[in-house]
Length: 283
Image 1 (cartoon, one colour):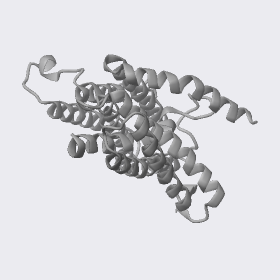
Image 2: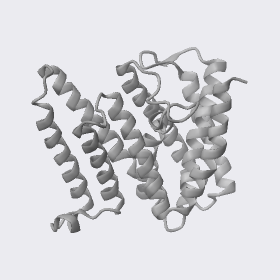
Image 3: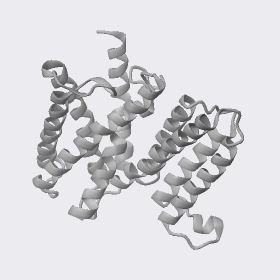
């Protein structure tokens, strides 16, 4: 057994129970975990993009992402801070607009070429939107529904992604022949993609009989199907960003796993779908 595999297993043994325990506690515990993960991921992104902690833009990025998550989840009320009547959506828009304006004015007086400055600002905005807009949905899924506990919703979501990813990897190595996204992730195959969906559907059946009988098997199947597709493609989106920089991992923060961006890339795309399905279809 390789050292990398041992490290991956050791981290999983410690991290998975802790994440699930916090997920069932909910409230400020869940908000704190989501915020911590988002800010650590933001640090990875900003550092990889060349924005160092010694520079102002690095900290502005952290503040913008933190405020966006705080406002989106209701833990930060900009109406009170600014003494101006403002909805949650208006607050998020205000935060992101202010970040866009301030960072554009800072970068425009830089010494690089206009093309390089524009590219840096566009990539910076991509990262802030990616993390600041998508991470809040993890917390929102954890709020559950009146008849379904948030902890069970997150357990279902994590199981779909974690075990589905394992199924995708196994099937891809066993049967994979057709490349899914050859320029972004050469090792991922169409067969592995389908295997991940099948694995997610199996989880849906298990969760129906174990924790979520009231949600209905049909709903669980549709959630599993959508979350698997969104999650696997979301993983490729993060890989696209890494490929554009020529790096393998976002950081080495988690032994054997890479960084926060590497571990929760699929989660950031699957969570909005699950939240939308629960609140628009199930309700």
